[in-house]
Image 1 (cartoon, rainbow, N blue to C red):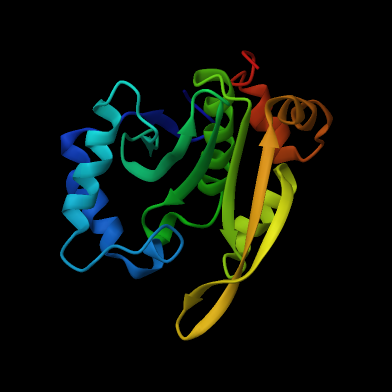
Image 2: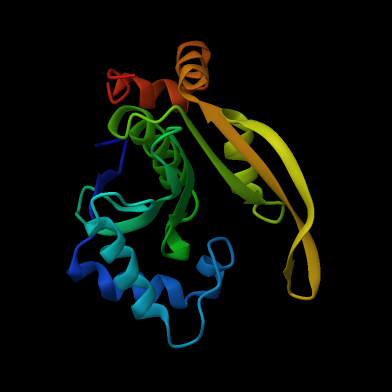
Length: 195
């Protein structure tokens, strides 16, 4: 599946070094999950192994640019196939790529693939209050379902976590009604035609 500047694909063994490098970056890990020192490569391998299972509750995708360079990571966790919902996480790897269009492109691709590729009914996720870019993006697209106050301890302080969700039907309405030029340009690519 292709967005404005990114394409989604399944991870491969050759992606292990770049995933390991991303996981070792403390700025990358602070918004994903904490990985114990020395477990970065093992964590990357476990993501690949999860994709190999037939009834996986976790799916990992790599987002790459037109030059076939890995840019980010898309994770679907806690997939409930019976109720057709999943937690979504999108992350941009290198610091130099974290501003601009990559983040919104990956987020929209992730939601679109959840609804058109995985046939889910709802996606949900968690955004840390300290991640201003993600907060802005999720508030533009998804609905806030609640706030978990003082939910995580980072750097000696507790931070809030916003819970967000979006239903497939609401995403369709968002696409139809949105006038933001970036979203309109994304919509014109035709990636949403199956929704």
